[in-house]
Image (tube, rainbow, N blue to C red):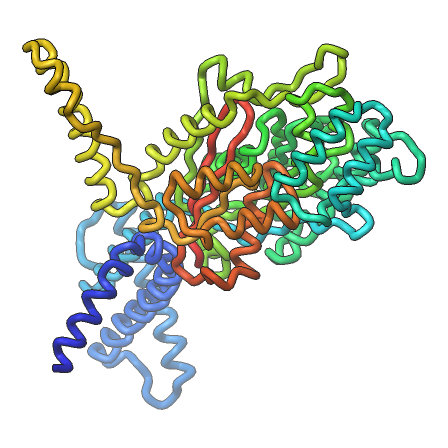
Length: 527
């Protein structure tokens, strides 16, 4: 019967609509409701005044202009009486019950809008290197050979790493390094590094501001993260000077935070907007995430350092954020949550470590413990962000499995204390339930740190291949661009992915790792 078919269709839609966070959906439209509410409130006041004038026979009938003038004066007198009553503390009903009800609803909406303080992503832009910056694997190895500092064993090691890295045959290196093809030594100077920074940062900032239809003078906060290049004056000062930002724009330059710094910068910008530009009018922030390759070519032969020469590439991303309630209608995304987990032991601190090798060559050493440390940090991060994004059924299974595991452990101890060691050893091992994040998240932007990193996360988080497709394609097309890689992935999801197309209402999770060691994650809502 048609009624049964309809009922089944409704049941099929329940899981989908139960995943939608209606608070966020309504929050986007509350400012518009508020504006329309003000219009309705004014119309109700005019209607109240006009009705009173008609009852008093004080409204002219022969001229519309005179009637409007009389109503306008009466409205002005009504407001004057209202303010006078407030000053004199006189109780009394000046406005009709309908007007009072609408005013109360508007007060509640205004309070919610002000307290909600959402952060919107108005636009973002990623750096697209010119063709003359792009090198194949063979050309990269040739560049390394031309440095005349690497042994044959080191060159062979880097070649093997490149073949297994998942990077493509046209990834970007800065002019200061590829000049080796012209018989010149690689430029690792501050000026050469600054030139790379100008090219990357100026391009993406100009494009992001253009997409967001934002004038540089509108920016209230600027945050730039670049881990290994922190010149004086800062990169922030460079942007302020180039684009003419206001002198009172708050600027922050983050360094040493590795590939996970972009979401840290976004969270810092959100905090600054909330602290200094909350309320109805809000403010705007610009976040820039990049890594400058020019000064960071390792020229030694320690294999712990050589990996950085094979994975990292030129790249950058600029994001325009706003907490203005009026921007919700034309924003691209809304920020739902950010979580950062910091490792605190010595293994976490040492696993990505800038230092000199035994010959005094500066570089970044990657520890053999990095996979283990990254897994531990990510597990803690997912535990913290899970309650915000997972349905209650998945959370319940996690709690049940943890309770079962604890109960089984206690039972084993009890059996051993009773002399039943054989029975205790036969008890099955209860594993903690790994929740299916795909039930709360539609798209994943996993830091393109390498093919092994993506493979491991895909397996441990029970993801489908199309979930990790953006990360693999970013790694192939751009290499590891450090903190900006998650924005190349979001761009791929937004503009190119066919296997899992982006839709309004979808939730996107970004996950990145950084030195220290830290794991950062953020969830965005597609508007």
